[in-house]
Image (cartoon, rainbow, N blue to C red):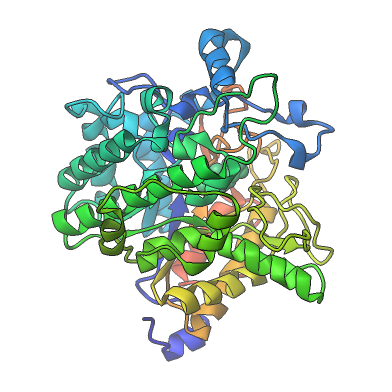
Length: 514
Ligand code: BGP
């Protein structure tokens, strides 16, 4: 619980506040087949570049990562037809020292990253781990510690070994739950004392959106065509249940193996507003909120919430459980809540007393009061304060903002400087509202900007959508020198962290150092 001191009343953040940035292995590491790493499903996520998107409604884009077995097989049999940028990332596997040094120069206290499961267990379920993979993360964590940066590690960030997807349908199978538990045990033991903050599954609620990199479920296309994902609520919730059990097992193992470490969840937080004052619109907000809270409710309270039972009844969901699952869920609860927060959503009544989750993480109805990014994501800093209050009110657990940021199309000017004022304005607004939430009494203990260094986009696999305070000279096709330079927001974030959040003015001189 944060003590509200005079300093905090005057605009500062707590002294031990964890400022930093967040990444994911499959979006930065590259080296997809080096040192014994096995293939992951994300290695088969093709590029959807901005030219291919031209003229298309962003909302109608197919979920690139949510592939059917048939399309995955096509990508495997005809790799020459595709470009797979996640295989090369930004080459962090080789550049991690320099990249972490730049983050330390900004004053980072925390670096959120993920471990690539198939770097440790190439097939996901091998009898022995891959020593070269384990050694790589030793080097990264040691470097973090040397620089005074706390590593915060996601166990699975849209990361499923290909073998477990193809052979076992990922988390449809209990085999994957067991394999995940073995993987967790291995990394908890190996990195005990080096990693204090863990989290289980990134944005676990992507299960609704058919993200097979998240749950590893590879769907067959129905005979005669059609949407392979539609209406398969029983399968989706079976996979979700298995992931929740896997998450609980990870919490239990973490607590047993390293009592000094803490472990949290990670929810893509969808804060919803009603489109109008019509009670039915507000009811739709309640429905969508329930679907969003569902995962964290199980992870924090250790049991299935009352409201999901009606959905299960109405949609014929009948989850198969092992005899001790409910006990595992009860025992394996999280120590803190972590969220990604990018935007808010507008809800309009869909005319159903018991609806399905929308399954979309893109907002469908435009909020006329908010500006949008080029990628159609509404910018809503006040929504962050609202959501932090809602979360704290519900769980009374410390909160870590494990992702917040804005992807923009920006390139260096003729002097090599990236004037990314849009990043600065986005950060300023959200940090201000986060401070308000702390004054409200919410226990927020850290903030990680998504993509402190430019990285491959999760949704589209492009580089063109840039988040970085550190610019990386690589384009969508991996062309470029790979050189890192300091963007304007680098200097802004550095002084913001240095002033403990007090100095929010966007007054970085135009001739900043790169
Ligand atoms: C979140 C993911 C991240 C990240 C971010 C931005 O959903 O957890 O991995 O990529 O979104 O999305 P994108 O990369 O598509 O811009």
